[in-house]
Image (cartoon, rainbow, N blue to C red; front, side):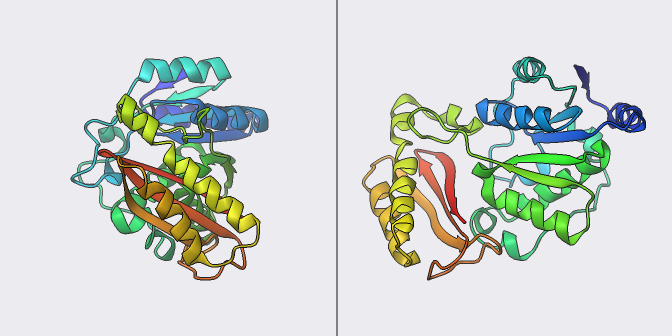
Length: 280
């Protein structure tokens, strides 16, 4: 497996692979890889001749009071995981490699970023779209793989690719969970033992709500109430948002009569966790 911090070296590899007619799958990550990331890399391995994993904590998607400095990192462990699955290249640039001192170009998707995490993290999705655009250009990938846990991100990237006619296919992959249902996340490492035990309330609340919808519940307010009541019974939990939105446009709805995303963000202690489910 090739390790590189340089855009030029990635491009040289890509040029050679493309000349040989090989397909390329890209898995964009911020590192500290876990089983969720592994599932994306495995999917990319199954569907492409070459797999590139980016391992980059992207500074421009963090707000001034967010956890950029403390975001967990373990590059050697990331390399070991990627190599064990069969990735061909891991791209681990420094911020200075990705962003020149006078960098001033950004990409954003307006409507889909207005609610959910976008309302709480105003710079986040412009940062995501910008770095993903750069990674698409650098890797010249045929397919890119994103997890459903970040459902808003998945929807926004898909819309960006459609609207701007990027020559790449976006593959969404299912949420990978712990045995007790907690969605895999790098931020789970911030939880102390009591908080970790309490965090399962997110999955419990969503499971109950999904069962109600599949049984015929169409009132979005009732779905929000079910979720909120379960979470509020956990003393260590504090709701950031509970939303029911149209899955295509990510706009709040009151009646469930089409594809829907039910998404939540909850603080467990000081740790903000997200989770969701989609009903097509």
